Length: 257
Image (tube, rainbow, N blue to C red; front, side, top):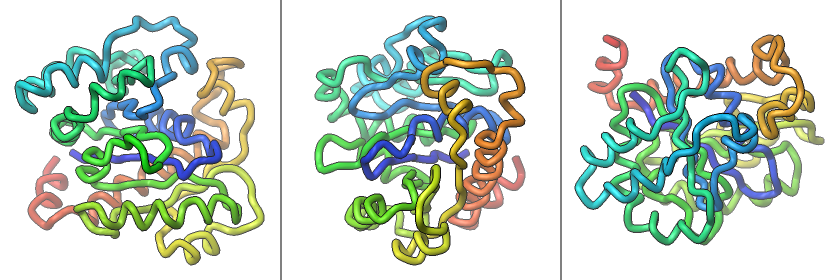
């Protein structure tokens, strides 16, 4: 299937919240992989520490020296159930940013293992800076989505980062935008300024965002809330964009599935 990477230009636009919303509304089986070099926090946030802690991404990195098959098997063993029916799974990230040095040589194999999963994968790659970003994961992704607010400050931050992403293998056509919250500019204006399509807009929805980011508040009626409805539309758009960007042979394979 396809690997979808999400990145932030900085300034806290809510990339992890967006990744969770997409995973919970994804049209089909999906793995949400916490690939943020600064560490993952979904277990302690959304699930409030009530799911079993596993080594997650670090365990996959430890198997990377044995090749992508071993890393892929380790990945499957590390998945945590998110939804009760094993269609939405979580690969937890590192718990200490000092562990990122152990990931750097393993990123190429991790990227291959993620892209070879039987279902779709959403990789939360965190803030894209000049440091230890998981560039191999971004290079392997079928789509790269820059999650940002529709403001001048965010556009200014996103511009050089989109230039960085354009230089990766895979071409610029897979780079898209996902706007979050309110701002002075429309999606069309932001897309025109950055030269990339905006595939979605997640509205300002504080109650739902608090559930997804910190596990606080009621889960009742979560699927019908504005943020989740918008995420469902965006998830479909990302899947369609990946299908369009795929080589013809890959398109036929996905259509058969």
